[in-house]
Image (cartoon, rainbow over all chains, first blue to last red; front, top):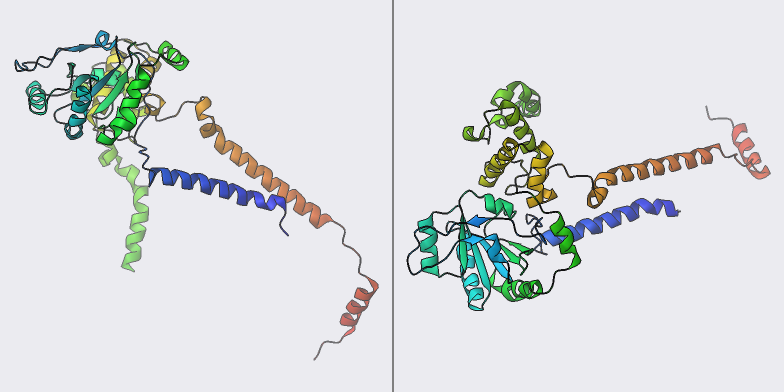
Length: 202
Length: 167
């Protein structure tokens, strides 16, 4: 005879089996990347930085340096890139496409040789309005960057609204990036105020 | 026979490892000489902090263990913070502010991690409760008075007992 109590272990097992199956499906066929870490910087103001432009740029490339104050006044993308980073190269046409659509893109050139960075932009085109050079990697750490490329959506008040780890694939333009840019143009929500209160440090 | 000896040796190997520890790979430092602080007290604090911070590139190593460049940069950053006069907590908070709780190898105790910390205890308590309940019921069942035999059953038992076993 089956008493209700006997069914409890079976029920617990069934629930756990479903939970594990869903998770396994997510990381397998579901395509969830568990190495991607949620950003701690969402809804916080962009970190303080003042980065120099790429040194010895050819005259036809006039790209000024980048500082925190530049990020205020309009929605923009901030792309952390390097010429030595293969996904950055693959991603480049997507950034060019965005720039042609009128999206403001700023660059942070991470631990790169200036001549390599200049050649990269000279050969592949320059999608960036401004590019700051981060030789020490400290600014990247301030942004919470851990892989390259990473792209941040920054709203007009200079708050980080979204972080994208890895390259932006062409199909993500319509499905992800453009909607996010549109969303970032909306006024900030309450959670962003809470987020900005906790930001400090130097 | 030889294969058994081999397996036995393999099983015994971890037991010998502590004796060999000066040569063990865990002693190969990711830390580079140029990173080490002159002040041994500060350096010791930096090492302890580094062991608690996750390398975000490898994700299952501490920054103290990892050879990734980001781990190196974070080790240097921790040392810079300490040199600038940060307490251990301030230095760790500085990193957490940028990378979130995920950077901590030991998850903090807060609302979002309640299940993680309390869960095993709760499941264990439920288990203990279940076993106790089962035990008590069984004891009650065993202790319950047995119904006396009916007249018919008594007669059959008597008949069986009266039978003489075959020689």
